Length: 109
View 1 (cartoon, rainbow, N blue to C red):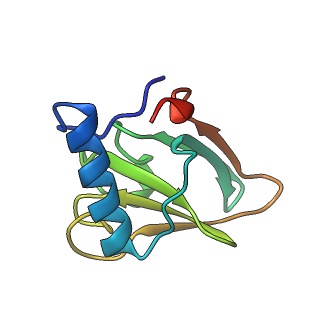
View 2 (cartoon, rainbow, N blue to C red):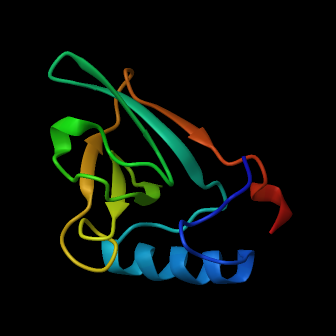
């Protein structure tokens, strides 16, 4: 999957929006960009990806995931109102049950 940000019309705009979201969410900007995240929360398997809504238990409705960032011990999932332009990102603890899948074109920047 090629790197994208929902509603960004081209790669340049996607990079700009990605950097702005990272700054707002206080997340590190890395060369590898996360496309999809899988984790277990309260015994339930969860999965989300950029461009799709979070699982129903998060009650964010149809709000799309804009970006997913990896920090030292956490993943930060950002939607419009959760780390994108307001609010706090959704936090997922890094552990052996957490798995990130990366966009495939990270080396083509």
